[in-house]
Structures are given as structure tokens and as C-alpha cells.
Length: 289
Image (cartoon, rainbow, N blue to C red; front, side, top):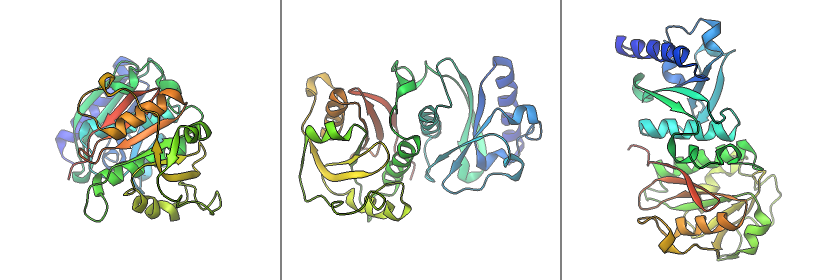
């Protein structure tokens, strides 16, 4: 890491102290050279973002909180958005918290940006008014796994082709009432454990089925109820932002009449959007090629 990165990291920590920030959020790939990493007082206020199964620096093994994101090349704002979104779902952040976020290009091992985030005033999800209960009733690890999986699909596609898909999480009984099966349920006949998306053996199967039209319906504990489900509840497209497709309208519709959350991957743009109460809470831009 060059001298510029060290200066940026040093200033980020100084800013955090001066504004009374709850935490400094940064990627583990660049945390090893943090100038104040050995200061236990500062160390407690660091949130490390790890990519995939990335190892964290040894000096941070026993301190700080970790948020895992998929190992894809997100934009700088995208890096911060997914980390904060998952942090909110985990209950790490509350309204009024200030965060100092250090961003850059982790694969090159340097940082070049500092963002100061006032939770409750920044990004779509944080101004929705109900972000603190965004994933209420849904296991945080399930929400996190779906976010990771969807962003990986946005980056990789399937067999060289773009894919679009949707996961509807929680309130599955009511969601099933307002939807119908388009194909034979590919998960029928399997145990709850076998069809739980937290089961690592199921990951490639889910990616394969992402090419099927319709939505994945998922219980709050991660058990996949079905795939290839057509959502019957749809909002009037005139009341919806222009430029978004049928998946987004369906996601808005089903979340407006149930307590579910919908995570949508746009086939055309590669963007990932999270819906709650009929509204887009956050939209993460397509990963960088």
C-alpha cells in the first residue's frame, strides 16, 4: 500500500474521533496497514468488510466486527451500500449513527475515498423511515446469503449469459396465496435442510434455477418453498418509477400487501434492488467487469 492510502486511512480515523462516529468501516484487504491498528481504543470501533472467504489481518483477529460481502468488484458506492445494508439487517447500526467509510479498489490493495454517512439520512434504504426493521422476522444470515448470491449472479451471470431473478423472503404463507406456480416445483420432496439456501451444497442449484421465470419463495429461516412462482399482486405501473421492469413491479406489489422482502436482480441492467412495503429501499449498481 502506498503512502497516499496510509494518509487516507489516518485521516479517516481522525475524522471518526472528531465527529464521534460509531465506527470506521473498511475492507479487510486494506486494513493491515491501518496506522492506528494496534491502538485497542480505536480497534473496538472498526468494522471490517471481508470479501468471500478472505482472511483478515492477524492483528484484527480478536477485535472489530466483520461483515461479509460477495467477492465481486462493486463500485465504490456499491461497496458501501451493501456493507451498510447488511449491517442494518444485523442490527449493527441505528438511526443517528455516524459512520466513516473508507473505500477504493480492494483487488488492487489501495483506498482512495472517504465517505461520512449519517445513518438515517443517506441512501434510499436509510431515508425510508423504517430501515431499522427492514428484515424484521427474517434471519439476518438468510438476508445476507440472498444478497451475496444475487450480487454474485449479477457479476457472473449463468453460462456466460445475463440472468434476472427474484427472491421473496418471509411471510411465505401469504405470499403463496397471492401467487401461482408456473412450473413443477423443483424443490418438492426434499427435506427442509436439503432445500435451505444456507446449505452450501445448494448454491449452484439455486444459480441454475435462477434462469427459470418466476420468483423463489423463501421462508424466514432460509427454507426454499418453491421456485418458478408467478406473483399475482402487482402495483399500477403508472405509480412506479419509469425504467423498471415487470419483476420490479411484481416485487413492489407483493411487498405492499405482505410483510415479505423482495430482492430483485435486473436482467437488463444487472442492478440489485431490495423492496419492502412496496418501495425500493436500496439499489446496488451492477458489479464492475
